[in-house]
Amino acid sequence: MSTYGIDLGTTYSCIARLDSNGNPEVIRNNEDDSNMVASVVFFENENNVVVGQAAKENIETDGDRVVQFVKREIGKRDTRTYEFDGKTYTPVEISALILTRLKNLVEAQGNTIEDVVITVPAYFGLEERSATKQAGELAGLHVLSLINEPTAAALSYCARQFQEDRTILVYDLGGGTFDVTLVKMSMTRNEQGKDVQKINVLATGGDDKLGGKDWDDKLFEYILNACCEENGLTPQEIEAETRQDIRSKVEEAKRKLSKKQSAKVRIDVNGSRTEITIKRSDFESMTADKVAQTMNFVESTLQKVPGVEVDTVLLVGGSTYMPMIKNAVEAKFPGKVQQHDPDQAVAKGAAIYASMLVVEEGTISDGETSAEGGTSSDTNIQHAEQLTAKFAVEDQTPRSFGPGVMDTKGSKHKYVLENFIKIGEKMPAVFSKTYYPLEDNQERVRLRAFENMSTEDTLIPCVDEDGNPQATDPANNVKLLGELVVNLPPETARNTPIKVTFKVDASGVHVEAVNTKTNEVFETFLRTESDIDVDNSAVHQLRISAD
Ligand code: ADP
Ligand code: MG
Image (tube, rainbow, N blue to C red; front, top):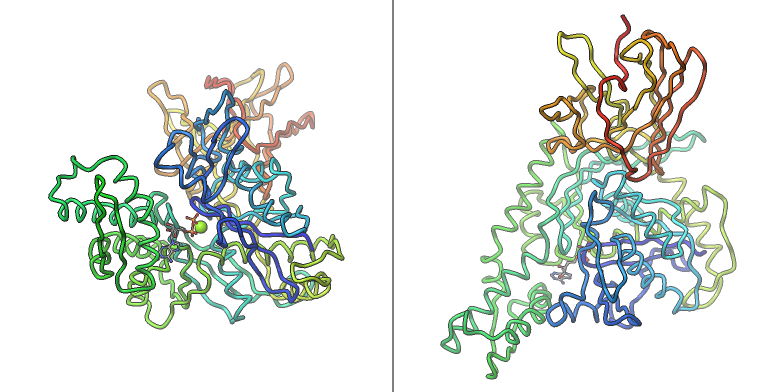
């Protein structure tokens, strides 16, 4: 079966599928002797683009030709682009290069790959999701669906040990990001009358600038200082080559310290060989504040769901291999901590989900040869069918959505955002409401659609000194997605009802407005940022209440 799950990570990516016994397995990256592909791209020259460990090795020497952490840029407004050899690359195109590398791992085993599920952080909004999907398509993949990373991790955990209703806290410390997610697993009966385990995201938190890299930086500083001490030099006297040498050995030393009590590194300090020994206990003291920071995020995420009782804590992300992490989490949640393949769990969960979807769709392609030889599809189908019977991953709206309209009730007109669909609602989600033109004989309405993180019914978007609505509001992350222009026939009365409907599904937001007098329908599909000609004049708005 050619369905795969892809964890497109900030620092490392991973691809998995179900093996011939229906168990998730990661596709090896033999070239880098790893289960991962570093999410790093090196533009060596116009004919050669390198992705993975080899690209990572060029960060110090050819930093301006290396792109890393592109996941932080994907789907962002006014995002940066990258230029190499006269070509411009968008974050979507860079991500597609990483996905292509993962695709090649499968093809190198003689298998074909088409249908995939790609994972995204639970906090990704519509544009980030849509851009991730585009990257997949650009890499020649058919993206069956996206799935939230913590949901995928929970799925791979539950596929391994099926349990009754429980609340899981997913602690995901990767290379550049820290995500905390509260996930609820609950038994419900699905439409076919089967009892299934439903997976819902309750709350998310974390920091997209906190990750393994911060531990690397501390260790770098420590080794640099030790090199200075050993050789009687000041940090300013350390040559650039020496710094590079340290930088390239830091991550390996960190990994060694996850297994052993101490690690040795040999550094060429301005031409003289110096051996530095780092004790795990020292590494732990110098990074204790980082661990504490993650625990503060755990605390603040728990507070978002009053009265929540955590049954299980799942450790996810490569950085949770560090014993200090497990110890800190264990101290807070004694006996509740679980850790299984922390760097692969997300990809494996996505692989499980991909096969569940294929079973649901009934579009299984059969007869493909597995890595070990033999036909894997039968057992895979069976296993996937069992999983589908057990799980229902309910797709939830990643954000709240609604139109901007005029509230004319007070003495001063206010431009407000009415949230039609709230974050966390089951998808597809639909909501309609009737509004009215602001004035008699109004020629048209420019109906704006917003995305935000608030769960309030009504929000007042930030307004500039002229009273014009702004696209962003830092607190609620209000973002203008686009607008629908509704033309009104001449002599339209101000009490003409205009019915506005928002429909949100995994592929985007569908906005519809119906002039209920003429039955004329206007609609638009907002998938990514559209060009918005900002014209904020009040004559183009709808108002909430009739006279
Ligand atoms: P992503 O951030 O892309 O989701 P991962 O979850 O794979 O990536 O985490 C990558 C981070 O995990 C890197 O900072 C890496 O150095 C770190 N890491 C991986 N293995 C270990 C280990 N054995 N000990 C300590 N850190 C590790
Ligand atoms: Mg990750």
